[in-house]
Length: 349
Image (cartoon, rainbow, N blue to C red; front, side):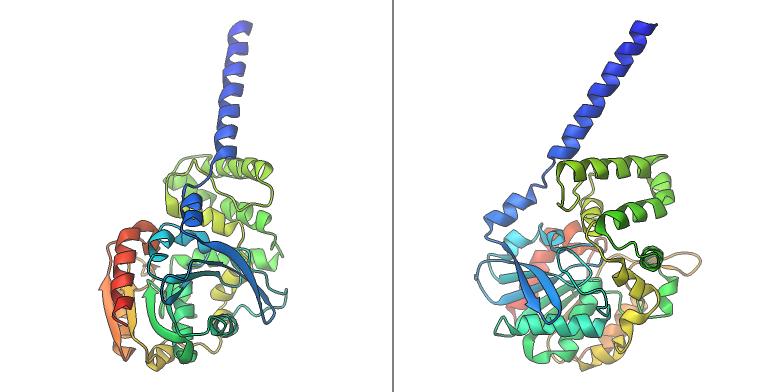
């Protein structure tokens, strides 16, 4: 019996070491593909913001990409190589995300972030195409409405138009995550390491229901292993098969919860009305809507309802609409479709 127990211990130790090795050696294959396409990570001091961005080769008109909330520039990695063939691509970590750094008193509002992004785009030296996903789509809306001289045309990739405004945001699935950000910000848990583990613990029931008991604890352990092997690097857990979930964890590892907190309490939208902004946009605009649904209790499970999308289209002066059978981050879920739609739309501008 003792011999049998020893074998079990040895086998368990070998399995653990193999798992640690797998976690520690994982490298997303798109890092190499993005580098081969000629992208370079850069930083620009814009007003009070140390803005991190990735710039591709000058192969065409400038295109600025603004990722979804909770993600970072690398979430566009599946489409960046293809886009670099026809555009001069800039993928920006806007404030609250990625390697971008802001002062502790920086206002997490659309007006402040939009103004700083507008000043960054001015440096490019000519009007740009802009594509933004989710909260990035709201910032793209702000830029098109308030910085028309630097905006050539805009693609709004499943933005939460109207649904993200307070108090309606309270009836969305997304607000559960924003509420976690709000609690973290109140507790001053603003270190990137702490917030990711805090977020996983706060959403442990989701992992239990959808993956299995103990998943959150195992995931936290994997993150600690990855950080030990790759100190200072954004977390990338190769054991997760879903690209969106894996890159979500990477983004949350660098995320400033003040950003989500401002969505939860409504302060992000102070001075930024979606309807008024949409009506001001004079450049060509493509509104892309992903899959959406409404739960029996009326909670919106998606960025926009069909009514929201129709209302937005009614406000746009030069709007086009496309519905895509994809999850919220279309560029990750259906990268080929995203590139095809984007290139077709901007090619006509």
